[in-house]
Length: 555
Ligand SMILES: [Ca+2]
Ligand SMILES: [Ca+2]
Image (cartoon, rainbow, N blue to C red):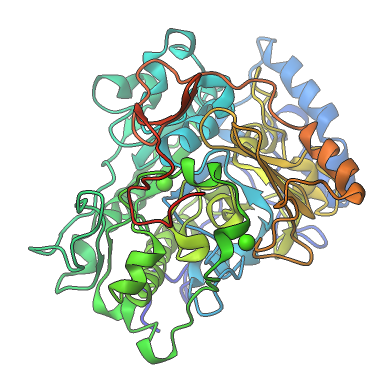
């Protein structure tokens, strides 16, 4: 295939880290001791297995934290660097997760070869702003009241000084860089940017666009972003190409005095799904496989399952089918994924060729998933796997590669996990759990299920087997993902609880978030509110008998 971003170019010569010489240890790629400057642990690590080394990490972390309080500070540059790659609206259609049998993502597959891939990772909100706010602040949506595309959490007095993940690393001597889409939209840019990071790169953008929309006018206002297809343009003219080029430049020019935390956020496969023809050529029309779509799948989901995506610019499946747009959307989404994968590859290739190749943790995630016709919708804003299931991949000097962990994981865990992997004290008041135990041993139990929230009171709780959903009106769904991985058969559809499931439901309900804050001041866009006289979507009372997008009349 045509591929711009080979992460391991033939004949490339990797330069070694300037900060230390990694040791080869049995079963590991390399060990780069995160505590190297404190205790000269490279030698120690060289004598241990990875398991033993990592088993004493908590002790070492305490020693490290203690050492920080003493005048003899370690050289900050001995800490591992971090490259965080964020992708927008990317569901599990990537090779490491196998969500679509035909998807081609060689860069992500190459990363997974030297990484731990979390195969059961879920976002905390199925929408850009609340998901990213949660990930970056370490707080669940119900703890901030940020559920919609607005507000920017810094406008809320209580969270004005909240220490985000980049700020935490900045406080610990890191140079922090943000390019592309990390926070949603313009948030964290303009006058805010100096507080959020040391170096601000280009914002995310679509880049070059066709003169007119490619697809027919879409319901709900024919939103400008609701478009997909190919037209005559160059990869180099796309917004994600420019963001990747910026990241490559940063890696080539990075000052050496501090460790760095480089955040790179890609926009595709967010709509509009435009890509050049060569990416469409990877997915010939005549052999394209479409997702499983069951016509009556929503007959066993409660009315309130519609409320959480009541009126959206994303077309329903009915419109896609009536306008022959399901296949074009699937093809454009796949093409966009392969293009963005190639840009991930460019960044990883630059890292591999840099002096930091052996002393950098890489984490890759998407902010939430995407429906392509399943359960009667396209887009996000649901509490099923298609919306919540996301890629989450960690690679790094102390991480043994080519392993998968099926423990439930949350994007909220990234903040404390990166702190662990960098040998920093655990940040205070974050609601995630460090995944370092699972990165060490992929069979290690994570003590919690993964929880996703979409507007106050609507939650999904997902463990290794079950997905339990409860909506703000109390209606429920339960899926046995072992026997029903597509979540087609709601076991609670008749409002009776099979006796044998009572214990399962009660156990999962025990994990419902403690807080369900009402909408934060300034909330807007894709917000649902329960009031005394009914539910309101974006301030307008919902009439179940008048669905706005041609959905079946609600009973
Ligand atoms: Ca998104
Ligand atoms: Ca169903």
